[in-house]
Image (cartoon, rainbow, N blue to C red; front, top):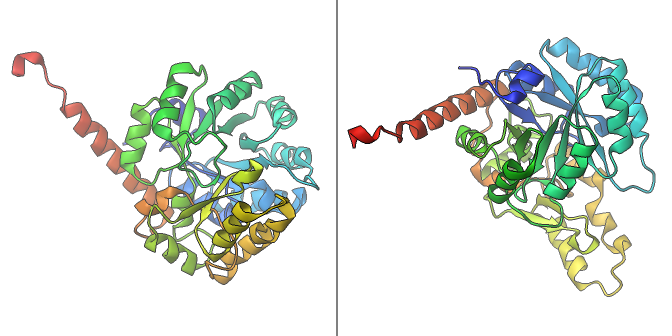
Length: 330
């Protein structure tokens, strides 16, 4: 049975599940599969080397699905920052009406997108940042708990608290991100006030995810303890899959006398991380994974996964509702 939340109504989707924007993963093959399954697929803009390459990927995705899909634009600290405005303009030109934003100083990009009526989902790890995003005019907030993969922020607040704080204090609808893999999680998020969920790591471990089979099998084998927090010393904390490279990086981070980022930079290279998904060696470089890896035990198709989550969530909510009985029957 289709869900009816503010998210499904606004985005025109059947199931309130958003596939998070993931570097080197958010290609047309995955995004279209998620959208065809009833969720919202997301293309990752910066996975494409240029704005024109993003244009080609958007057009490719349009040939693979007639359902809504979006584009992720993540603004991160960089010595040579990409032309975020140009990526946003391509999304506008190609008729993309849903954009997920994240990162530092998104104001100019959000203003550019809102000027043409784009629906903005902005990812935040704190209520303070969420309030700032509301002031920029975002339509939905993606509240990202400490369990999540990638950039976790510096406050270490898990979703059970963060989502309730969002429900208490935010005037804009929000979805829950970080730690979600099944219908029980979706039901819990909805019960805590969210309008849906965002899943990244879970979608990495699907048939359509464009990464090496070895990495998917590594995720299936992993436990919830198999992630590592890296770069905390530089207040750029990321949750990565725990492997030989992250262990070496953390050792340098803890023992460095100078505290220079250059000492650890070769270990956290994005180029090496990309190669992991191509060559299938989980120890070749760093790659993001959330604590949710402990909940992932198979490699289904996106269609199978979304339908399963939909069914589980409905069963869970019905079961919870059945716990309430009229006082006269007690």
